Structures are given as structure tokens and as C-alpha cells.
Image (cartoon, rainbow, N blue to C red; front, top):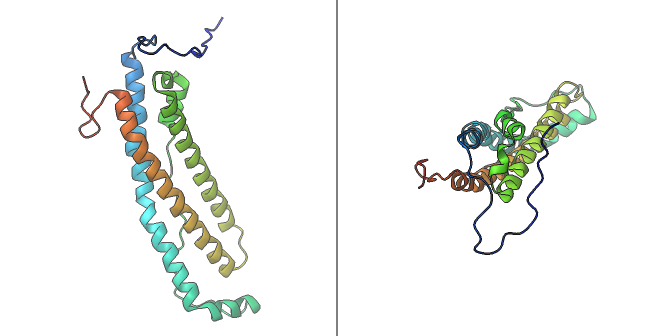
Length: 195
């Protein structure tokens, strides 16, 4: 019969020593893997695309401002070509890796971390999923759009949304990493174990 884990629901008396067991080396390794997943994989993947998305949006907005009449003429008569050159409109995503989070869930190593921190981490991962859903939607549209002007308007909006999600994610990561360092007992500046 599988072991059943029940949450500790009673509040601890003030000044009373914690009754939670000390984290094992295994749980510390999973927390470290989760930290590495956040710090290396997630942050660098978001930073990789963020500046480009901001630039692509600005370039497309400038394109619409400069060529509004010609683009409207194309919408009235699709035989009229849209003006070139068309700014870069490649929709790239940060491409998140969820393996560290999935592993932490599967091994129940999150039980060794403060519940508020786990909730914040979960919210960041959920935000990543919403970001990826937006990318999936624009990628699906790229296979079926019927007019380049509508496509360019949609992708301009996507770049604005993506840049906003990326800014919010980077702020979440900035908040989470020092808290995760403290939970691991590491110095945020050095990564050394705090004793």
C-alpha cells in the first residue's frame, strides 16, 4: 500500500522548534537542479528573445506608420502589393524546459521548500505556459493566414504581448532566485553554502 503524505496543518507555537526533518542530500540536489533550471535555462532563454521581440514590434509599428495608405489600398484591392521591405516578423519563443520542475514534482522535493516560495515558483511556471500558449497560437496562424497585412498586424500584437510576458517573467525570476538561494542555504552573490 502506498504511503500517504498529509500536510502539517497545525500551526507551530511561537518559539517552538520546527518539526520538519532536515533536508536530505537528495532533496538538496533536486532543489539545486530546480535553481539551475530557473537560472540557466529559463532566464537565458527569455533574455535571448526579449530584445529582438521589442525591436520587431517597434520596426513593424514604424512600417505601419510609414505605409498605412499603401497597406489600406492592399486591403481594398489584394492585387496591389504591400510595400517592401517588410520588417523581420519571425515569431520565436523562449522555448522553456520544464524538466527540472517536473522532476521536483515527481520526487516531491518541493516539500522541503517554503510553501509560499513553491507557490511563487508555480505561478512563474504557469506564466511560462501562458506565454507558450500565445506563441503556439501565432505559430498556428502562420500556417493559415490569407492576407499579409492581417498577418503583420497580428504578429505586431504578438510581439507586444510576448515582450510583456518576457518582462514579467524576468521580474519573477529576479524575485525567485534570491528566495531559492535562501531556501537552499546559499549566498545569492556567490552560490556558496551559508552556515
